[in-house]
Image (cartoon, rainbow, N blue to C red; front, side):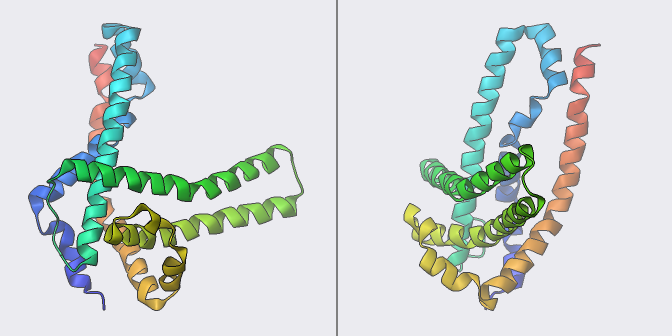
Length: 221
């Protein structure tokens, strides 16, 4: 039986690690800083070559932190699966990075069927195919996205617990537990909890984003 109280408290068991993870998540979205107005403003001062170099460094840094963030989330899932209801440490960065790469590779492979469906939807829309067929493909796409959102957490925990990339694709075990109340109820609770806990950070992100939007105008003064 899931101990929801301990699960809800897990992100707040170590505030230093919590805020470190928050900063890593912000750095993982560094590429969002590359908006048109800011790049134009920097171009005035630095020149096009320097802006392109900065953009490349920004993309690499964002990718690095995204992999690091993913690796840490795998470590959190591993600890939770083993009954450790506390934020794990950030030690052994090489392991974090390796697990993060495997995690992202798993997402890419899982997403391939949905990319294919999206391509079919775009093709049908562009060629004005029969409305009924188009509606069927749209419905399949929506169902596919829901299935991905529903199945992926279980696949991720399965991978985190076994630490084998092949665990992502052990569909026999994954589907064995996916459509049971034992998984569905905690998944539903976790979804609601994730939405609720993300609200304060969305507000904080909006404030930071608003401050960032002022940068081009300050540079051009």
